[in-house]
Image (cartoon, rainbow, N blue to C red; front, side, top):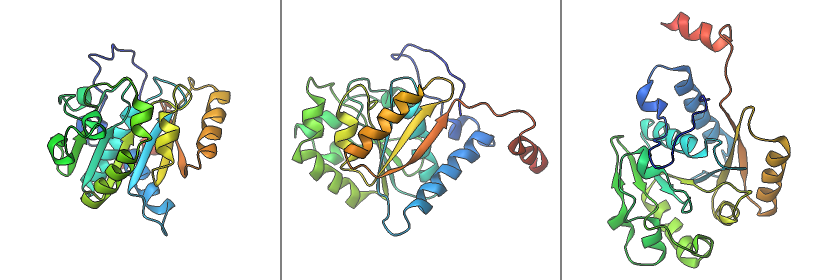
Length: 234
């Protein structure tokens, strides 16, 4: 969905097409993703949604941030949680501070209301990473994390969790089992087919409810239906 750009993590702010390109085709695709998520589980409402990828640099944090925004734009109370405590980026994307955050909640140093950060998007709030811990997998697998998810569910319509790439560390497997649904992000022309299969297998082994796959970095041809339809509307 986006062209690849290599930037230093310390300075990279994820592209928020939902803010920077309000009439773009890409924004329409994010709205479609939102509606597909709503329709995929008509019997069981999805309130906790995990985003992961097979490896780093495939765009899962960008996807998580933009999907969170389109849910907020639909009038939902949305909480975006940066659970990639090994390489957090949400605080850069939303120009916020990294602490206090999730690590402070999981070590019981702060309460949820003390770490929530507002954004410029009505209805969207953040839990950033907090101080980067030395044992994220242990913290994420704790009873404290389970209780925290229950508390979040009581306060928000949907909680979107940005997790680390699943082939690199166990964190995403741990969290996917605690969430109502999981989205796997793959990058067109970059994600290796075998890695995508391995990622899907790991999610299935953890009994995750895999809702689908988002294809990122795919370039539409100029004569594609979406371009013609968008031009006609304008």
